[in-house]
Length: 124
Image (cartoon, rainbow, N blue to C red; front, side):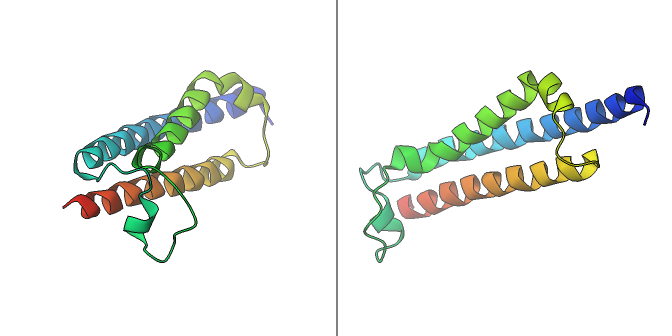
């Protein structure tokens, strides 16, 4: 394998992933902030969302903003850790590796949007 060609492919995939993760972070924050205006600010929002689930306590603040914070941390780690990620490779095919990372990031993004929409529907 040519090391220069491998590095170029990594940079291209990494830049593409980081760009799209940044968009997901911004959309996640925007949706959560928008939902914050409509959500009831209570100490325990879980019983309002699902009355049968009374065991888990979660405030509106943590319910809306924990996943955007996780996405932001992942995005910042992706930006500032590019050289570390270039040296640390789990799979032989980088496209599959970035695909798995994208699926995980999309899952967290989806959960963030889902939580914000559920909180918005409570307030309306």
